[in-house]
Image (cartoon, rainbow, N blue to C red; front, side):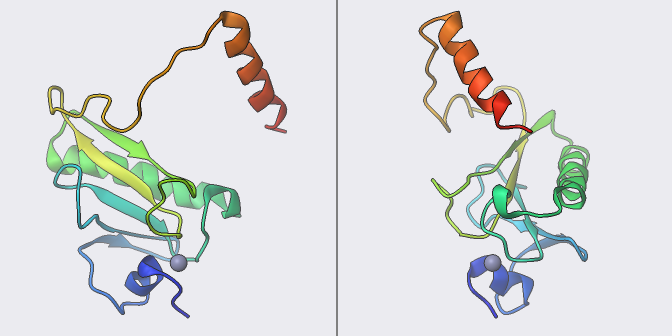
Length: 135
Ligand SMILES: [Zn+2]
């Protein structure tokens, strides 16, 4: 039952440049990379967002391993690891972007405009709101 582009790739119904695949996650190259070597790590089971993912640990072990592999394999200085949930999420199947990075690669503040907090109190109120939701 393919419901989206990534389910089709997982089912082998659509070609992709595979990097790794196991029982938990499937990793392949983004067809429109920020930089060459930009990998998407996707859970094999269909879930739309991080909130929907029941068993987070095994999936993020794959993400961690892939981030290491991108860095070592491409001999880059670091990585950018990111996930959109619903807003700006191009495919409604959870995916983590792993983008190889180097200093002075030109990727500077290109993803999100930055803002600042009006005061320390305002910042703390945000931290408190989020912290309360952790448990
Ligand atoms: Zn899917």
